[in-house]
Length: 311
Ligand code: CP
Image (cartoon, rainbow, N blue to C red; front, side, top):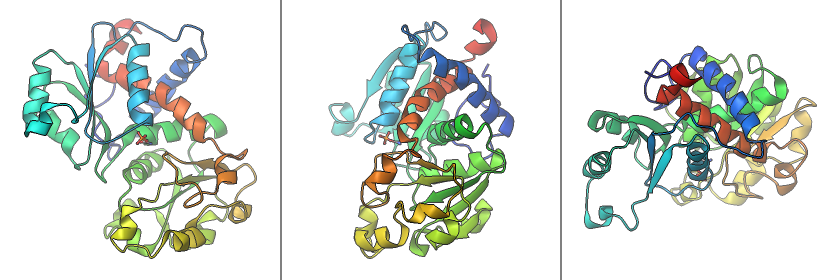
């Protein structure tokens, strides 16, 4: 039995505030464990986790692997290069063969939207989405919310600006659902060519002017500009994007005094964010990375069902 209302974490759309609060609260004690000399606990002993990464990753992959090890799970890592995917083996055959070796949980990153859901249809294991296409990246949004709550003690009522490629960003989507469930005021900002056609359904304030978006903001979460979008003609040049939407010290004068700068990484320094902002005193970018491990420990722990037996 999962300690959450679902046995999988596929996204944050329709996840109740109670589940989000439970994950964030559970992560507080795991965050404290990360400050200890011995950063290891027993609750996932005997559980085997597969990290199935079809797309590149630095933060999410290492963070999940460390989270699993710190909770005493057995872990196995898969990437397509060097595997039988190169001989044409399908996703279904790949995961069913690995599951035959007795896997309990799968952390999956895949370039196709819906791949984590697909795995729930062909495996018995618990599935955790580590980023699927342009759909969702739920643990990134959870660690973002943890980091905001760590600083302000709350999420409700804060003005959070998500700036970048709204159309293609899975981090933005998960942040929208999570932040709205927790009562934050969410502002979406980016070029109109990078706004999705269904934007109204998000129920957020929309701004194509960065200075309007930043007015009175508490948090600015800056997204990576994916350079392949420029080749697709969705914005004219990196320089123009930087001029219109780049987060610089000058622009930040419009924010509340105790403002926070976030970025999920990897960053294009000098494109979507200036280096002196990324490394400045309002930046919590590396705190996000540290907190990510605690949040992923909480997700693994709660979805494993071990919280009821060994808490
Ligand atoms: N934020 C994030 O998902 O980074 P990685 O692609 O390095 O995992």
